[in-house]
Length: 190
Length: 180
Image 1 (tube, helix red, strand yellow):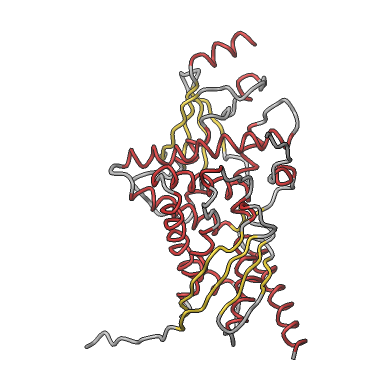
Image 2 (image 1 turned 135 degrees about the vertical axis):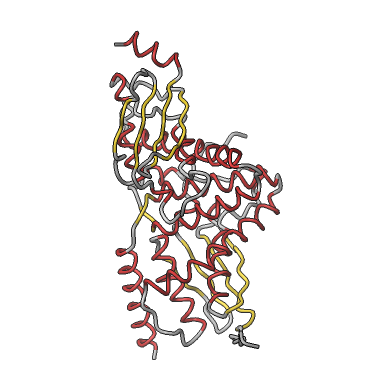
């Protein structure tokens, strides 16, 4: 059984690599610098770190809602049997396909998993000044995950547990499954 | 006490160029524009906002490119390529004007996936070019420092291509003349 899971992981990793090699790419620096400009703008506009955190998450959500469509269109994925399998897909295919990074899954259970990012293109060239030490710079990713998973009927809560910008070894995101949404079909005729 | 330590991003400065998917960038950029739209009232303000954002990017990208190249020359063609992955489609000098140049780009990266809008989103690129020496190499191949104050603006031309119009400040031309 364990080897079965291993085999799946390898297959997903390959799928992620293959999908990433197919898509058009841009310089990671252009991406990080642009994101830096966005964050700076938010901090200037809101003048409050907590409010900027909220807005970053919201922007991520809007992105995630649409990113999941692209993921499903470009990578041929089978339906996930369990939440921990979803975790593997998010890490090995999702992150790989969009950001080109390898992400590890840790502590995956049926209602929770953690993603460990040792490299993070968003946070490149970034150091947080002291007055912004509470800034969740990569909070965008939490929003993306929330938006993307909601579109596939999973309401989750994401939080940034550790961040390399806070001096931690890795960036760690916790994803907590709150509920599985039931697809409701509404008859337009009535 | 003053602590001396190597900044954490030092290794990233030296790292080889990496890539992310274009759609990730497009999503981020579209979010940025949507957010900016909520903060402005007119199209002009939106252009200004995008330019502002671009200025920071341009300044840092130039810094980074120079660090990587480790040469005193600042090669802007290379900078354009390192940011946008390809050389600009063409560079033209505006007739009857010494201080104006145009960079023509048929399909600028930032406009990919964006349908016609009242504002050309390449304004972002325009802003980004301002503090860097836009194509100053053509002026004299004397790229000592990136001090080429210039106004850059983005326009659409008749064929639907995006044109970045660069107008150098008079002191740049004077200096170039002295150096020639």
